[in-house]
Length: 110
Image 1: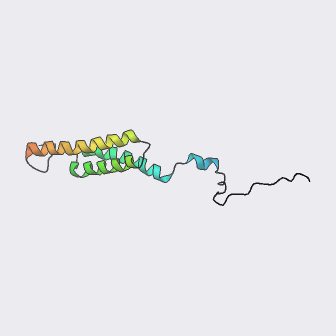
Image 2 (image 1 turned 60 degrees about the vertical axis):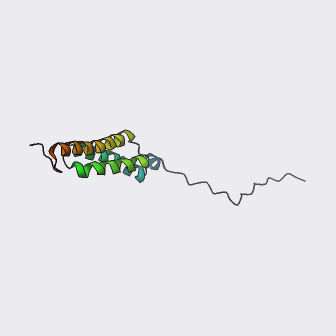
C-alpha cells in the first residue's frame, strides 16, 4: 500500500477566503467614518459661529452633531468635544444675555 495524499475536507461552516484587496482600496476610508469626521468639524464650526449669532439654533445643532459624531466613533474626537463644549457655551451665553436684557433677542449694538 502506497501512501496517498488526501486533502482535508472543508467544514460545512467554513467560509472561503476573501478576494485580495487592491492596494489603493486599502488606503481609502469608509464613507461612514468620513461622514462622522465631517459632523465633528461641522459641530465645531457651528458652535463657534453660534457664539456670535443664532445661539438658539446653532447651539443645539452643534450639540447634536458632536454627540452623533462621538457616538459613531469619529477620528476627530477632539474637534467633536470642542463642538459639544461650544454648543453648550452657546446656550449658556444666550441664557446669560437673556437674563440681563429680559428679552429673547439680543444684539451686539445694545
